[in-house]
Every structure is written in structure tokens, then in C-alpha cells.
Amino acid sequence: MGNEKRDIDLWSQIKKGDVNAYHELYDRYINMLFSFGMQYTNDDALVQDSIHDIFVDLHRYRNTIAADVAIKSYLFKSLQNDIFKKLKSQTKIVRLDIVAEDTYKTESTEDELIFNETTLNKHATLAVALSSLTKKQRYALHLRFSEDLSYEEISSSLEITLESCRTLIYRSLIKLRAKL
Image (cartoon, rainbow, N blue to C red):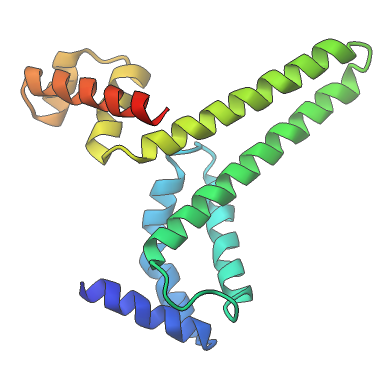
């Protein structure tokens, strides 16, 4: 609770133009924001750029931001939106390069653009759904489906019983399906 009150104090000082409060808020959340952003992309430069952009915008629009804000939620949601915006624009840029190289295949290029846009939207939806899971649930799913570990290996890694491991993954998948 002390941290939350302190965040609110920093927020009001930022609105008044206090640069030290701005730096303190940045220092407090930079590591958490970076870890959070890396869940959506493995491009650490993009995540760092997004974090810096939200803090630049925070400074730029400090006079118009609301006074009563859940600061942590605001920062995390802003970062998520900025990352998705950058990923979406990167995909469009790459696809426009493909169109320029191969103008003879207009129909298949358009189909490919539609397919890629749909895929990007699905990835964004999945990322949002994954963010609703606990860290332990996300980690268990990562080990199971990205690292292709067995339930026994996952239970050992998480230091839980095999049955708890199966239940954890099962319930995580049910929660994901409900979100999707």
C-alpha cells in the first residue's frame, strides 16, 4: 500500500512538471515493464523503444493526463498498446516490401497480406489472453508447448506433483479458451 500511495504522489508531481518524480517513476517500473514487454516479442530493442515512448508521451502530455489513475495498470496497458502498434506497423512495412518486389502477383500478394494481418490479430489476441494468466500458468504452458517438455519435467521444474502439473496446464488451457 505504501508503494501505491507513493506512485500517486509521483504521478501528481509529474503532472506539476517535477522531472525528479518522472525519473523515479521510470526507475521504479523499467525492469517490470521490460519483462512484461518481452512476453509479446523477443525484440528487446522494440520493447525498450516502446517503454521510452510511453515515458516520453507521459512527459509530453503530463498536463492533460488524468489525476486519478491506477499508475501501474496505466503504464502496462500503454506499453502493451505501443508494442502491438509497432508490431503491426512492422508487419505492414515488410509486406509492402514484398508487394514492391513482386507486383505481378497482385491477387496472391493481397491474399498474403490478408493472411498476415489475420495472423497478427490472432497473435495479439493470444498475447492479451496469455496476459490474463498467472506467471506460473504462462510458464507452465511455455514449458509444455514452446520447450516441448513432458509433464514430468515440468512438474520437476516447478517443484509440484505430477497431478498438480497436469491440473495447472489443463486449467490454464481452459482459461485461455474462455478468453479466446
